[in-house]
Image (tube, rainbow, N blue to C red; front, side):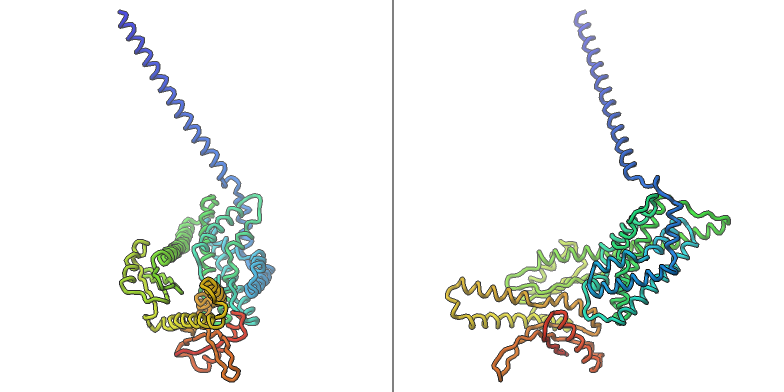
Amino acid sequence: MAEEHSKSNEDTARIGQEKKVEESSRNLARRFSLLWLELYRFFSALLSIREETDYEKTREGIVKDVSFRGHTVYILICSIFIASIGLNLNSPAVIIGAMLIAPLMGPILGIGLALGTNDDELLIKSLKNFGVMVSISLITSTVYFILTPLVEYQPELLARTKPTTLDIFVAIFGGVAGIVAGSRKEKSNVIPGVAIATALMPPLCTAGFGLATGNWPFFFGAFYLFLLNSIFICAATLIGVRYLRFPLRKFVNVKREKRVRFYMALFTTIVILPSLWIFWGVLKESWFKGHAESFVAEVVKMDGARIVNQNFVYNDSLSTIEVFVFGSQIPEDTIVKWRSKLPTYGLETCQLEVFDGDNRDDEKELDLLSGKLQASIRADIVKDIYDRNEALLEDKEERIRLLERELNRRAQSEVNIDVLSKELAITFSELKSIAYATSFEKDFQTNGVDTIPSFLVKWDPKLSKKNRLKKEAQLNELMLVRLSLDTVRIIPFE
């Protein structure tokens, strides 16, 4: 009997313990649920932007800024002139000032708002004023650069000729910031900041420069960058308008409403799909160049050979990595070994081309000649240093220090042919290739030796002799200014 009573007490205690554990688990679960609920409410309140949206005033403000007439036209013309001067002077401060006063965002935000609210009338009005804005900007910048031609292509100008992945992200986040800030009841200075960040004006001015000089790669590259920025700002505005739930335009006629919605959806698709395709293409090109740089830095190595230039050519079907070296000849089995490592870097659809002293392709002939000339000149320099300073070379350490100082000085004075060739390819479309070397001229009368920077140039065979001489004179003048030299030599190469 005592044993049964003891067992009953144990069962009661066990059941009580289980109930306590179960109750504790339920309490813990409730606490976690309450915690997640509180966190959800906190972040919802923190990130919520719909409650403070002023739909009516936002629409009024955007519609008011869409039109280009009267004072806005004069402001636009003045801002274009200021931005063009800033590009001419290579002054970021002047360019930023021009972007602050330029009324470029109105029509672009208007297109995004129209697409987001199915407002066909606002869309037509915004597109017309967008065309007016672009036309005025191109005409103004073209006139400026015709009247004041550039002697030298400034970095601020060259930077506006091709879009990058970062340009796309700036346009996307700029568009989001623009519509979110513009829809607040309390207005801020975000819109001018968006205009600066997205940099709509400099590409337009650069396109005008391309028109003024007949440099079509400049024009198409810069105008493409402007359109790309505009499309992504418009797309971000459209998404922001839909997220903020702006009221859609109401129609009395049901058939017209369906027709308008269909055309608006079609136009939205036309805007969004190319944007995604372009964005994906720019991302793939950026990815390719990043992996190609890693491949060259980590794989393409050999004792006695040094990389003097590298070029990455992206293509959807077959991209190319071009590596230019001088020094020891690269054995074919070494090149094959390098190529076998391309898949390791995700470059399966890429080909590797290595150009050394034995590669004499017509397209690369001058680049290789430049490498050989540089190697020969270095050898002569070392010999000349040794002869002139023989009395000082009393021990090995002094010899090494002297040679290193002279070679460092020569390295600092060398021309960056890679950067220079890209600039010249844009400036002189008829120029096929260029090589750089430092030549030593011996004067037999004075018995002196003069060092003259020399450029070996290869022109388009279709270029007439008269135009070739004119181009060579322009190239000579550009090199004098660009390299801060008093004498250069331009040598035609057939």
